[in-house]
Image 1 (cartoon, rainbow, N blue to C red):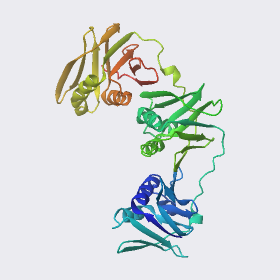
Image 2 (cartoon, rainbow, N blue to C red; image 1 turned 90 degrees about the horizontal axis):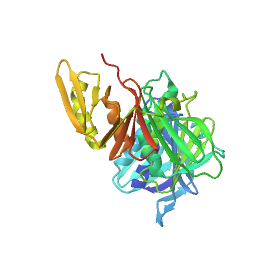
Image 3 (cartoon, rainbow, N blue to C red; image 1 turned 90 degrees about the vertical axis):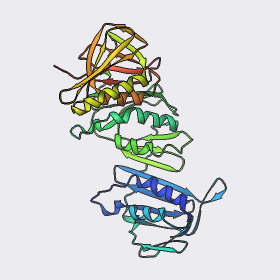
Image 4 (cartoon, rainbow, N blue to C red; image 1 turned 120 degrees about the vertical axis):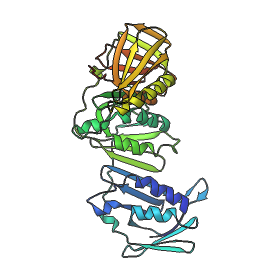
Length: 379
């Protein structure tokens, strides 16, 4: 392999695919990136067997030549060292030349590195997903869905299926749900498809989705999403992002969402978030994060917390309306702040069915997104 490439383009591609490279692995070749030069350009691949990212750098783009390929070929180079080297090269023109024993010369200006390469034939092959189960989502919508759900996945491996977001589709709508058994995040969105697509129990690891979100900012075209029984592929303009799916049946969360409520409070989301944030200063000091919420009149609610060692705080927060019964309830401040940030709404409605039942937060006059939180039992 022998080629010349623009440093900034090469550096961005290396950073993109390196997101799939594990810092620790028992398979030495997976500490590397596979580089393959061919007639269409240079393809870079990174993988940790759970996530795989493939990035194509075309010969030219927008009438600008990005690569000159003198000789096709391939090699696997250590991802960490390659990334650090390319980042610090002195000029924007980089030459890569691979010898028959995979020793790779990287040259830029007066700087010349020689990296030990590995045999690309030993690198795991990416799956070929031939499936008619495919649909399309705008990149910004997909990123919003990830932001509004993935934070609620479980961090505990005792129930592995809860460390992912459950995707299901019916009648042209995608539903994404995440829960750690203490809270639940749900987002629905319409999608485009070439057929009448229905599926359920497609559980994508939360880590995979968070890494995918980092790649979506530069995408303008809709993302093609392809499903098989064990893999999901997110195909962008020049990037293919593969993730394994989690095994196991995702719990039926629909029964957790109350269909009726006894108390509904409408309020400014930013003001409520700031009040919870202030009250949580003492709640965190007591290491329990518990906030008490009292709704007894139609103009304001009271938010308070108490720490025996530090002190107590209370604040009245103006509300837009109170409908139904008076209420006293306690909850985890972090869970509520996470939910409010995910909703990204100016006005929210909180629906309660009792002091010891799950409650719902949702934007006013919008039913595509909701957050559900279990209260905390206090003496």
